[in-house]
Image (cartoon, rainbow, N blue to C red; front, side, top):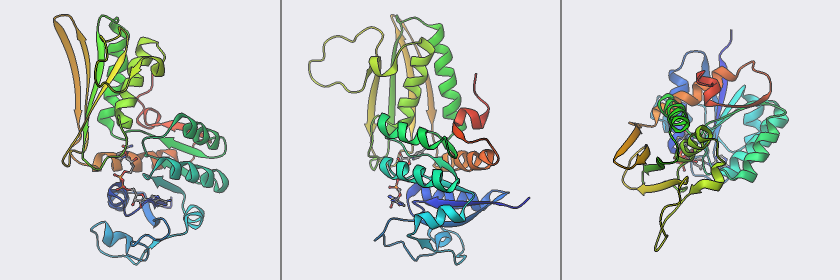
Length: 270
Ligand code: NAD
């Protein structure tokens, strides 16, 4: 069987470089190209050299449609509006699309879901096996405990991160809401400041820390009178996300068109 040709959009970004590395190390797939937006100083540079590997002559390009036409699968860790635009291109070209971008609004998500009617789209707010296991555990614990247990999600990331709470924190909060059978957006308390009043029973609260080069740390707390359960995941480096994204691209090959998530890829669904 021939290698899966994977294109990387945002190939000069933090995750983009990691992905070039991961695809190169993974059996059964190759990097066939990568793009950065028009005007980027990285256009024309060797994509593998940028990722710290030996140069191969494949250069960072600026033509996104051409990359989708060339690729069997494209991996996208960019920005919300950019990922929506890429979902539309994938729907037209029939290319598999793996999206790791976070901070996607409900409206943007609806647009991506619509594109899943025409091609295979796998999305994961967190591509690591550990966090997806944590989400499953969170759902199970939330289903077992009543709302005497206050649920709080605490996260910390590096100081470059632009969205908050993190996509992973929201993934965990949504897993808790699902376990408790409540509507997440109704009970989510996404920020507290000043005289907030007492905590509302049943809320799922978020707390956000930013600093240094922390890759990603998440704790889900279930806090009741006199006892507290905490489940934590700490990411050591970004390779865990890149590994998950490449696994998703390989898994997606030959799947029927539709929208999938990392629970599908990792076989962790109910
Ligand atoms: P980054 O800023 O380092 O990289 C983003 C890259 O996308 C940049 O190189 C930028 O030039 C490029 N880009 C922007 N617009 C583009 C366009 N129109 N066409 C092509 N390239 C374009 O950011 P990062 O740290 O790599 O994170 C990217 C996203 O991935 C964020 O949303 C982040 O939260 C998310 N992320 C998700 C996971 C996960 O497991 N799902 C893990 C880490 C990061």
